[in-house]
Image 1 (tube, rainbow, N blue to C red):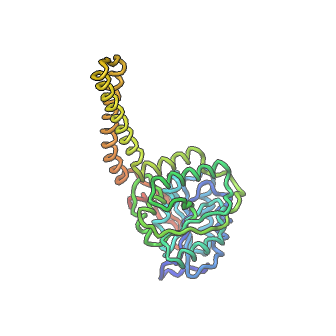
Image 2 (tube, rainbow, N blue to C red):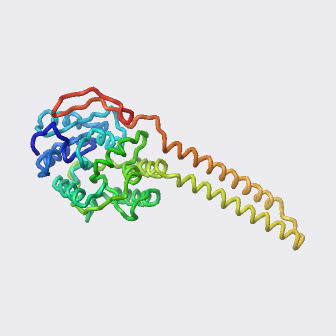
Image 3 (tube, rainbow, N blue to C red):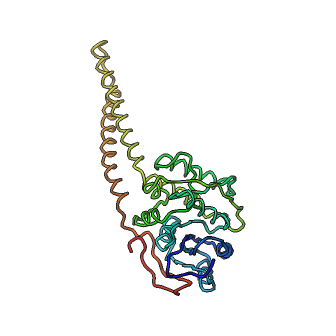
Length: 328
């Protein structure tokens, strides 16, 4: 990686969200700056409220490196997707690769991913792994997240959604406009394009720390996928209401047929259950319809900031004051 030519934008940008990555980030950057990529490229590090000394190490990397590196230090932990979207807004490359800070994505695969995206004129290329070097829990969580995405996103069935991906500038510019407080990068991608590819790459074993994806984080991700980019739960409520109303209607027909055919009078509990089912069904229907409207408004508008940048450090220009990202 040669010194940056400020007269033209870089060919490639890399966005790396950093969370408690003090033991891996320096080695990862050392491998990335040695990449052989045609044209200039830049690296954007985003510290997502790390509880270790990741921020200090990132500042040292920026101060000592001759490469084009930008470091965004967020005021607190906003979440991986918020951090990535913040980083995307500070890139200028024609293509952007996003990757984790855990060194499980080999730096050498970045060039392979970028070249495949460019050669095939894809807007996005996701990576897949011949063997995932995650824990059993993390693998199960990923499978469930991808299953959920298959249900609610307009994406090819079975396409593995990895955080190690390459995006074209047109996709980056479009999804960066999203200002809601709960972004889901892949949901935004499939709202933007269907020109998507997949590439098999190496997945390295984890050498330091444990995965930051705890059960709580995975559950939040699943909820984010379902509620922020789909009205599926609301539609299920609507259909449940219709089903209950239909059952109550069948009950009413049965009571009348039984009475006029055989002269039987339905016991009090039967009549009560029919009435309860009827009103419950109507309630679910109206709640579902109302929820459809509220859900669409919730998806379209958001008031909380996606992230707040405390400071911006650049190997070219030093330190800049912070800002509220997503509302800039």
